[in-house]
Image (cartoon, helix red, strand yellow):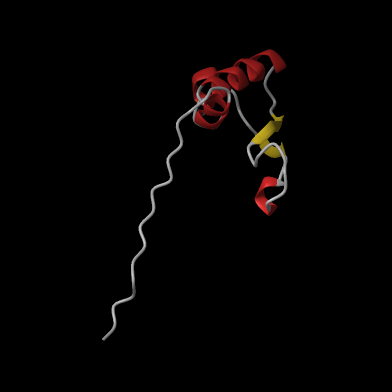
Length: 91
């Protein structure tokens, strides 16, 4: 949001993002279930600004389009776990 605010000439006095997720964690404990993937993600955005609500809304829409997290969660994306295990050097 802060990155795009100058484009819209919007001043942000205060901002808070609360992220909530819903998921079934039964698979994590070896129980039958849906798996540990998120079933729902909610970003609750609170913005304080002296600007017109319509201008702030345009900024929010632009920021949402530019949010890699929100856009990635909306579509399937390949996820790979790459690991490196090292042993401490013994002297």
